Amino acid sequence: MADDWDDLVLDEDFIRSAETSEPSARARMLAARWRREKPEPQPWRSDEPPAGWFFSKGRRRKWRRR
Image 1 (cartoon, rainbow, N blue to C red):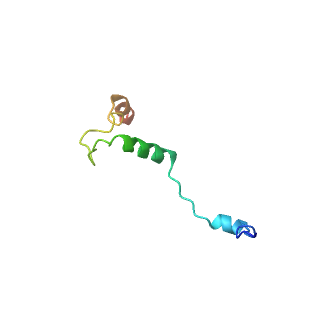
Image 2 (image 1 turned 45 degrees about the vertical axis):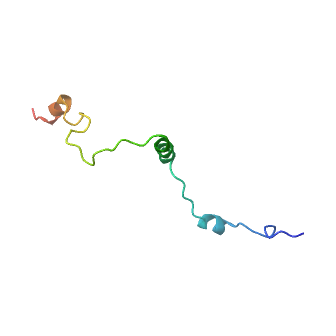
């Protein structure tokens, strides 16, 4: 009994032409988390400064000329 797959040859051209698309580990983690609990809605743009590092006093000292 001959099988259709017995004579199949997977050469390098066939393997390199195969398209692969797998989500990143972070995307899979977030998808699993969001399935369990919906994420909180986030504003597109916030009026608050970013995390405080950009406007910190230590950074301002470096900007001033002496």
